[in-house]
Length: 107
Image (cartoon, rainbow, N blue to C red):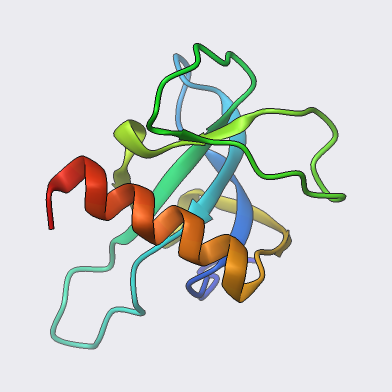
């Protein structure tokens, strides 16, 4: 898959590079248009839980290890770094992420 088109609510394996490794991340941005930069906003999944209010723990059957989506780790990634689609969050699960982002960013 050369240039996948990830969509909001999907969880993908993403190659974040040597230091951050290949790890799951949740797509939170809307699809980019032809006039936009080809960047996709994601929130990485971590298994190193610290108990932060900005770690959203959601149990997902397609993730092998328990962990949390780290809201403070929000980053944009170009499509070639998306390795494999793992699954998708439900509407209610996405609402937890959205509310957490709003709290963190004071929106």
